Image 1 (cartoon, one colour):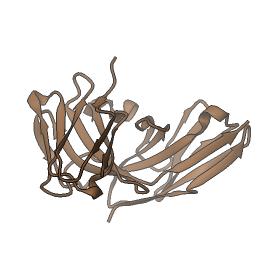
Image 2 (spheres, each protein chain N blue to C red):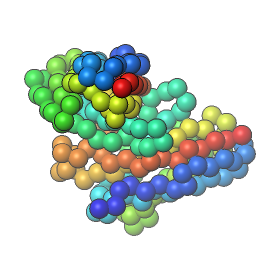
Image 3 (tube, rainbow over the protein chains, first blue to last red):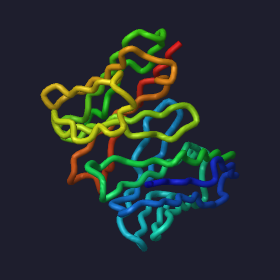
Image 4 (cartoon, rainbow over the protein chains, first blue to last red):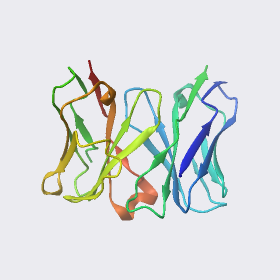
Length: 112
Length: 116
């Protein structure tokens, strides 16, 4: 069964303190891995899509990487406005649809 | 460009009543998805429309849930009759296949449904 596990569940950082979030996945055939950011009361906001092991993408202070078993979201010198829940999701080649399978997310709090 | 619009943003209904949620996707997006997040759990897929056709409804919990997409534009999700376990946040998302690598799926802000 396809599964996505994110760790840690919650992370508290000081402003400027870099760290990484982990997304481990089990899927029969990976079509794509997505990272989303979600603020309270809002829907998930798209950050990155990764398709193959070794691929990396960057956006401002965020960098996503992908291996055959997991993805990391690296946050460099975070600011308070980076506080949010970060969601990882995968697409499986084998399904009839492009549905996303989500993890439960990592709640990030960045303190000034 | 307008985003994905969902309404109502909140709905509180009694067990046994009927509720209809609406989603307006981004204009021109053929793909429309419904997802749900139940308290403490991950966001889970409900169903997928391509234009007006149901591509996959494997995530629909039971026959109390009915989704429609009129003319390939907006979509409605009806719950009838509502049960306590239907409470959660219902998200709608839309996409266009060739844009997914750059833009992913665009989600609405969700409808928070509370069944009491």
